[in-house]
Image (cartoon, rainbow, N blue to C red):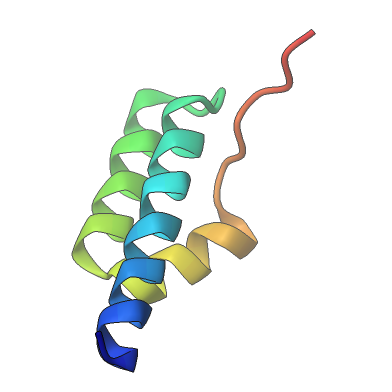
Length: 61
């Protein structure tokens, strides 16, 4: 298992986390579709953009 495999796995896990957070957010359906497409089409860059600018999961009360 080389560094490329480990890096790919880390990006995969982070993208799954982003997708779960996007689904759980209070954003509109259109915004969710945009963010999901961005994360799926550009896994690393899409994740970074989502991390700094994307919707977050709503707080559970």
